Image (tube, rainbow, N blue to C red; front, side, top):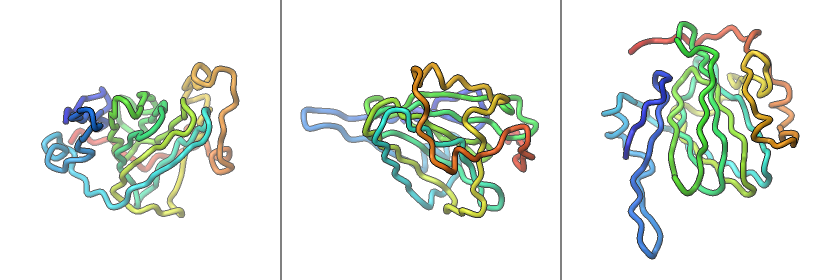
Length: 190
């Protein structure tokens, strides 16, 4: 397993090593020791699995507020997504900036998203399956988010949607803006 820094403190790409032969492949999906050696000390408590039928399903930008903040380890087991995060940590040199990465079932990369980031993804292939581990249980009363098309975020989804309108949940259509969000997340160099 290889850990790749992204330039956003705490946000890292995990590249698993797959052992392949004529039968298929085997890989370690998560290794607590490797994560700890990379400075990522998390205890995952819940695994989530999302399926999207169509190209253009956009989920996010999501996060949980204190006291139930979540770190996530995300990856794709079938299909392909554009995974995007926003740094919401006040005082961070990358505050308000986005990071994007394509995740697919072929390269099998994972993205570790620490507390203080809003997370979204757009399906780029039909029948996409998206997996993620979280270190805190889902708490709907602390569920929050930023609109995918917030002009202050200024992320170019259009180039990936090729003229299509994204397929959004009613919840995601009602999310607020970054300008109106008073972030409880504070950047720490630790």
